Structures are given as C-alpha cells and as structure tokens.
Length: 237
Ligand SMILES: Nc1ncnc2c1ncn2[C@@H]1O[C@H](COP(=O)(O)OP(=O)(O)OP(=O)(O)O)[C@@H](O)[C@H]1O
View 1: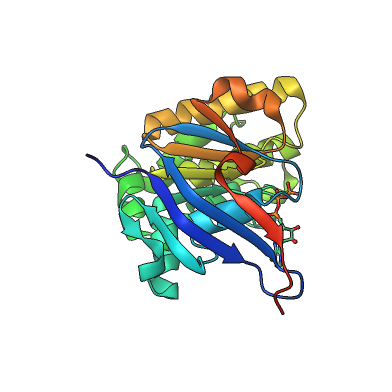
View 2: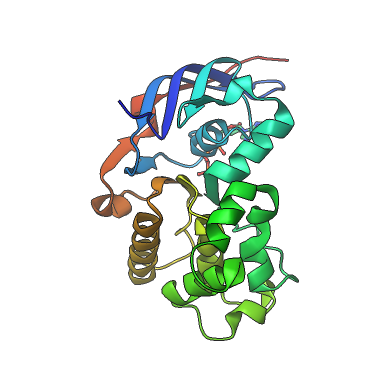
C-alpha cells in the first residue's frame, strides 16, 4: 500500500503558557491526491492542526507522518528542510515579501529545497523562472507581473502569487489556511478552480482549513475539526 500523504496518530499538543490550548487527534489520514476541507469556527484550533501537520510545532505525544516520514524523528533544521521540500504553504495573510518582486517571492521556497528546485528547473525550457512565469499565467496574473513588487498588487493578485509560491516545484502537499477569507463568493469560486487545476497538474494533495462551509462542494471530503480532534483549554503553566 502506498503511504498516505499525511497521517496523525494519537497526537497531543498543548500551547505553552497559562491556560494553554490543547489539541488531541487520535487518527487522521489524508490520501495522496486527496482534496480535503477542514471546517471549524474561529479559535477552534484549525491553524494549530495545520502547524502540527507541517511540523511548525511538534507533537508532545503521538506521531505525525508525511509520505511515511515521521516528523517527530527529524531534528529542527532537518524538519525545516523537509517542510520546504514537501509542503506548499498558503497562509491567511499570504506572508509575501512586499518589496521583493513577484518572481523572487515565488522562487523563495526553492532556496531551501534542492529537490523541489530541480523539479521546477526541469519543468520546461527556461528553468525555474520560466516555471514561475507559467504559474503566474495559469493563475491569470497579468503580463509583466513577475517584475513588480508583490506589495503593489491587489489582494486577489497577492493571493494568486501565494498560490504560485506554494505550487512551484510540485510539492506533494499543499496546505492552505483560510486563503479565500478576503474574497467575495464569485472570486472564491474562481480562486478555488485555479488552485485545484494547478494542484491536480502538480499531483499535490490539498489540505485547506476554513470557517466557511460553502466551500465544501468542491472538495473530495469535508470534515469538521471536532470530528477528528478534541480540544481543551488547560491550566498548563
Ligand atoms: N502561538 C500561540 N501561542 C499560544 N497559544 C496559541 C498560539 N496560537 C494559537 N494559540 C491558542 O490556540 C487556540 C486555537 O487557535 P488557532 O489559531 O489554532 O484557531 P483557528 O481555528 O485557526 O482560529 P482562526 O480561524 O481565528 O484563525 C487559540 O485560541 C489560542 O488560545
């Protein structure tokens, strides 16, 4: 049997500090190529779940595996490198460098991910920069956008740059944290269509979290966070 894209087994994590928020996930599996939407209200722990899934934080107990690799078995530096190679991340606030060009923003994750860089470089004639330009065009960004400072773009355009940055070099897993929250319903639909098309082209699995259950129809599977995880506010000091 092929390894799942992502599994969490008997995972438990508590944010440090007084009244630390605890998330426990006994059993979660994302299949390769699957598109999963995870729903929950604000503050329910969605971002915490994603941080565990991609090794930004490490579980206090249990196991998080990505394509068969146990994230907890990696040292911190190795985990950062693994994340750069295996994850395309789309954050709520996009996290673009506003003064850097669109091209430099898209190419940034490749600096820390040699295998991903090689895939982007070999994707077609012209190397990684040409692949970044191809993604910009596929995501319907305007001509000439590659040279523009990212901070000069509209919110919707910045969202697409964030998607191109996540997709470049075909990482096996795309993880997206509320990427459509700033868009109206029509723009959300267009955005998801573009994201899904490009993720399918790259063969990437997609894990998205949102509070908006109207997005569900497009996904292979929709789960509420409370169906896969228990949360509590403790008294950790
Ligand atoms: N960096 C942190 N340090 C300490 N506690 C945190 C941290 N990030 C989140 N938490 C705690 O975890 C709880 C869940 O937050 P989380 O961001 O995971 O929820 P969410 O469902 O993603 O919310 P939203 O939809 O508003 O982004 C928060 O209420 C907070 O108490």
